[in-house]
Length: 437
Image 1: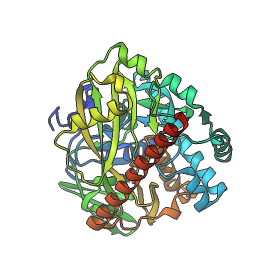
Image 2: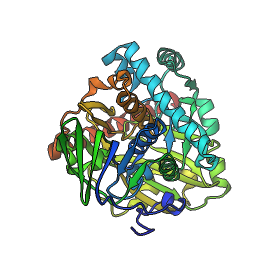
Image 3: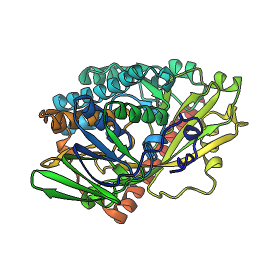
């Protein structure tokens, strides 16, 4: 496989050298076969290999070729589904345990970076989630109460505190999370892969899983040129799982988002963004960004079920940046790329044992990078005999995502959410204007 096989991105341009892993040829045996070389599969393979399990991982393209190697690089607790909604659905105790499992994922990532001796992978600490509308006088009390309910460490920041770090009138209050951080995701994935091999695991790139059959008390995983016989199979392919398990493939909705990295900006960037951590906003399809390489801005945003790349992607992303930071109107975009994430309709990961010895660890779009490690930890514990962590995710299921009809319905929902965001901000601006007159 060619050295330049990774899609063009700033991550690919700054990635570590990595060997080409051979395609699986012929039949082999393992304790666990893992399908998918993104973060969910890599963490699962590594955690199992650490426990002495014989692991074979197959990846259709290259390690972290998909969303795992192209995302915003955020690592923090929580899920795409909002915590308040989870409490309403599941109750406080269950929601608190789910949040604790996401915190486990954060620590797995942090400890792995430390174990690899790669501080360069860690690119900044802490996170701000900023609101584009005024959240009212009770914002601080509500935020502290939710943090206490979940066992979380996030805290409220006032509008003044937020704007001291982020020089934009677009933001009001924010939530500060001191436990979050951001990383170079592709280099982290490559480091995970190298560690799996050090532990005795086998990785095969250019190897598509094509079929799965039960053979007595084991599974036969067929690939394009070979097969793996294993006691357990973990399906971690998310939006690109493919034909190996049609029902699960149809339970994940492929959703596109976009990331851009600017050319080097100079001191103007430090004047606008006086913060080295990660930043996102509270809109339903909001922006997420961070400073990288000293004075470049990495900016992600937008959500659509149309997975084709827009023809004027760089101009579109530049416009999003300038709408928040008009003082950066002279920036130029050096890189821009799409990424396809896997979403479940319930906005939670799909984690658990779906048949004896057959596991899913998927649908991590929009959650951040820690949740893949949290899911891998739950699956690993289940394979080793403790199903309690995986059971935390059982209420969400693996229902059909709706195919083309589901994609159209999801797109309508996203448009409605974007319209709601727009209307909330317009109403905020009108109220502010009335107060000034």
